[in-house]
Amino acid sequence: MMLRMLKQILHTGLATEAYADEEASVGLRGELVIEAQGCDGCGNCALNCPTGALEAKRKRLKWERKKCLFCGLCVTQCQRCLSQTQNVALAELGLRLEGEAGILLRKRISNVLGRSLHVRHLDAGSCNACDFEMSALGSPIYDLQQYGIDFVASPRHADLLMVTGVVTKNLLEAIKMTYEATPEPRLVMAVGACACSGKVFPKGYAVVGALDDVLPVDIYVPGCPPSPSALLQGLFMLLGKF
Image (cartoon, rainbow, N blue to C red; front, side):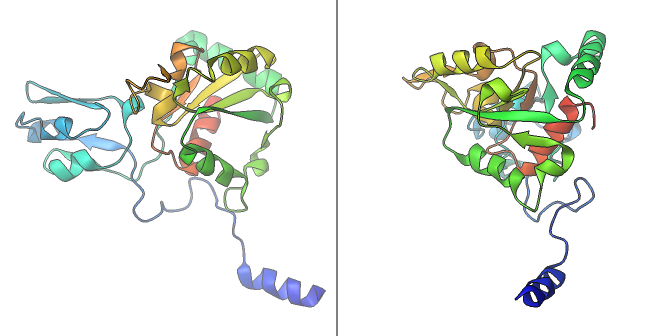
């Protein structure tokens, strides 16, 4: 029995992905690239954007990454001035961690946390797509624990809250209570376009809005849903490892 298992393990080989060393999966849609010189101002790309992430004005395109679903609809409308890469390094730091003051704060946080990070997942009203991608981080393919990062069952044991979904009225109080229960220095990550911008369901009767309408957000990882590689990049960026 044991020999059979060893043979199977040798046959399977190493499954864990070496972050940033492997080629992106086929069909993965990442960062949008705008060729300003190709724009004739027709605005079709912006009209077909479901979340208003693209704005066309005077033959110039403005792209807001936090709102973007990376669905590729804009690229299908205009391949002359838009293209989509497989770059999933899409995370953005929040205001608190930007600039010189942000660098000092990140060093202080890194000194407090050391080489480990405990994460509590908080569902603010998601469709579960981001949640499924997040759960893949614990699989042998991504093996989150190899970096000293792990999920915990209570906010009282957490350093970081990873929040998925647009903030809903029913969960607003629970979100605030979970944040208050997390010890300092508590960090907050907005996962997915819903949490980052609130523009996927902008006028829903049960919707409050984006996560930064109710909590201070330290890092944004946009997408619908963001891939596990994009989530890893966000975590490394937060810890100053990327």
